[in-house]
Image (cartoon, rainbow, N blue to C red; front, side):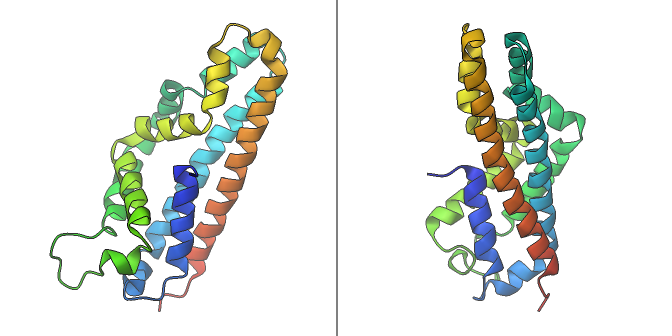
Amino acid sequence: MGSLFDEVAGIGREFLNSTGRGHQVLLDYQYTLSQFCDLLSYTHDMVIRKLEAVEDAKTPEDVRVACQELQGPALTSAFRSRGLCDIFQGFSGSLGRLLPQQSEPGRASSSSLFSSSRTEMTWRELCDVLMEREARVADVYVQQIEEIGQLASRSEVASELQKMRDLALQAKTKLTLQKADFDALAQAFRSRPNK
């Protein structure tokens, strides 16, 4: 299974290709979806910069310090200091409106917005993560870079310095690809005709 970010990008691509009954609903959300993709690109960039600090580390102590910035509390603090808490929560409410609601007349059914119950479940998980704000979003990033955190917590960082750099490069490469995906989705949602 891919990461939540990979799955959300896949759903975004499905939304872009939508032509069913839910198509008009999604057209009404183009701006919100483009802004959300921009937000994910921004937060990915924040984490990428922290991974670059691990790559550039010259000593085991530099690695420990850089890795501390990739832990949940540090990422939570970084998101909070940039005022992202309420933004995450706001997107949870906005994007959650795409999920099927109980007896809403005229609302597109989940089958017309989501290709499967799995994609609907993923979207619901995304909305739950965002509702729990910066700490939960930080946890999603920490899960993606879990191996770096595990290695940094061991005492033998000195002997694992190159491995830490390699893991940081791998994680940075993955996040950079995801960031490019979100940048492309944001642009596609912005440039999609509103018809």
